[in-house]
Image (cartoon, rainbow, N blue to C red; front, top):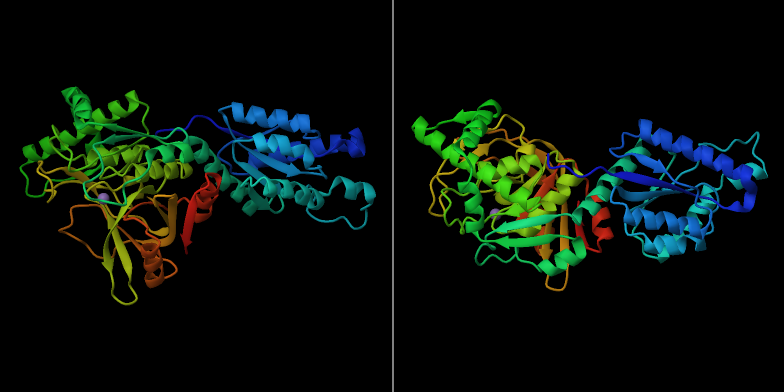
Length: 474
Ligand code: MN
C-alpha cells in the first residue's frame, strides 16, 4: 500500500527528586519493564521508546521540543509513576504539538496489604500523580487521550494501539495532498468547502488540475505497461464479458489499465496521496476512470467522486488509521424500507473500494447512463459484514462539522443480476428511523467513508485533536 514513513512513540515517566535516587532507580526499572511489555506483548503497530525520567521542567521541555522536531515520533505516552508536580509540565506540554496519551496505570496490580508501608505508598502513588497531572492537561485543553487500567491487561493495551493509529493519522493528516481532476460537480452543495480553512485546521493541501494535465500522463503510458497490467488483472479478477465481443471488452478494460498507470504516475510525480474526479469533466479521456480508481483505492490512495476533495482527504486519513484495511469511499444510494429489514444500499457510479470486497471481484464493462464517454470497466463485488463506522464532513460556512454514524454492515442475500456496480449494505444505529433522521437533520452528506477497522472513538479522538465539531449517532 501507499505507506506512512516509520513512526515510534516516546514513553515519558513522571516522577520527582523528593524520594531520593534509590526511588528513582526503581521508577526507572519499572518503566523499562513496562515499555518492554508493551513492545513485546502489546500488539502495538509502532514501537515505544523510553525517555529520560521527567523529574524537572527542563527535562520535560527538552523532551517535548524533541518530539515536535522529530518526524519519526508520532506522539507521547506519559505515566505518572509517582507524584510529579504538574507546574513542571506546563511549559513542555504547552509546546507539544503531537498527540498525548496519559496512561493512568500503576506498576503493581494490587495493594500488598501484608508489606505496604509509607515508602511503598510514596513510591507507588499513581492515583495521586494522575490527578495532579490531569489537572494541567485539562486546564491547557490538551485534548489528550486517557487510558485507565492495569498495563498488562489486553484491553488497556488495545486502547493504546487504537490511539497510536489515530496519532499516526493525525501526523499524516499534515501530509495529505489531494489532486482534484476537474472541479466539483455542477450545482452540488455538500461537496463544496473552504480549502484554506481545511489546510489550516487539518493540514490538507488541495490542488486543482485541468483534465488535460492528467490526459498527458495517460497518453504517455506505453502499450507494454498496459499489457503487463492487464495480465495482472487476469490473475486477480474474474472476467465477465457479458454480451460484449471479447476484443472490444478487452480494449475497454485496457483503457482503464492505461488510466490507472497514468493517474499513478501523475500522483507520484506530485506526491499526492488522494484525488478526486468528476464525470462531467473528462475532456480528452475515453472513459470515466472506474476500475482505475478502484485499483488505486486498494493501494491506499484516498478518493471521492464529483470533485469531493473533503471526502477524498477523509478517505486517506481513515485508510491510514485502518492501515488500509476494509475502509473506503461510499455513497448513500437506495433505501430498503420493509419493516424489520430497514437498511441502505451503498455504492457509487463505479468507484467502490475493493478493500471492502467479500468475494473475488469481477471486471464488468457497462454503459454509465450519464456523461457521453464509452462504456467504462469497473470491479463488481459484494461488501463484507461487520460493525462499522461511517463518516462525512461538511462545511457549514462558519465551521466544518463531522458526522459519525455507527452502522452494521451485512452481506446481501439476493443477487442483483442487472446491477453493474459493487454493493455494500448496512443497517443504521441506533435504528433506521432515528439514525437516518439525525443524520439528515444535522446536514450530513451523501458522500462518506466507511470503515470496519476504525471505531467512532478513534474518529472522535482525531476530531478533538484538530478542534473539529462532530456529531455521533449510535
Ligand atoms: Mn457521488
